[in-house]
Image (tube, rainbow, N blue to C red; front, top):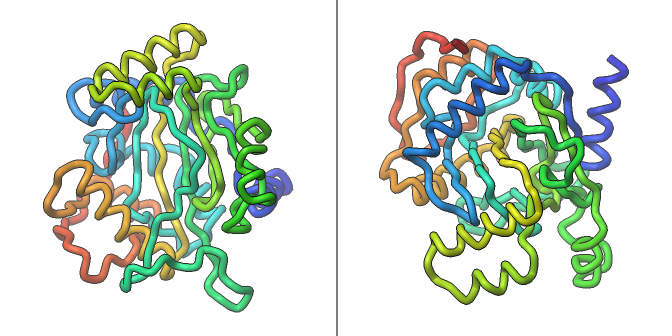
Length: 297
């Protein structure tokens, strides 16, 4: 209990923590193979690699990670009994990013919600749960972050602070099978191309050429093949509901999907684990019937 309590304190203070050995060796290999097989024929080119939006919903056969691992137990431990799936999940393979936060929800009026509420307001509790399916204990290509940045909309030092944290930051370097949990407001980054590659990419318009430039740099730097899946959950309330609506809109645009349809298998597995669903209200959504729980083969 003390071990778990320390992780929850890290999440509260730093905005991030991780749980070891959530996936075993067989599950790591199975999930990695399922994701890469899917990306070979689906997904889309994105930031030097491949990605699949709404991943746990649209990739058949991977829903077992909800109830055949400790994921659901950890979600409830972190969030509470009112934990909900906020209809947001991505798979990323060898992509790069810049520094950013993941909180995107807006109020119905289109006005950004206040992600840093006062003490008497609803607390912000929307988190990303990420499995990195390779060994990052000896490299810094999993996740870079600014500890405590989830507590304020501005970084200490303003623009100078941004420049400072471009060079000075903390890293999360999980072993295979670990589950990384971070606050959606955390200022973070994954892997960043060199300045030369960035300049060259701006000079070309062809997406495949941009990909080749990043592939070349990855080989030069000796970077390992990197694939991970991230799934978002939140506490019942306005923040989770609005985040779900925003992400559904975003995912539908990326996928080219006119109507959001939730997988029967995903809904069944979430229900079996006691995980609710964020309220979509008037968001178009195809209703589904509960299906038999999918298990890992």
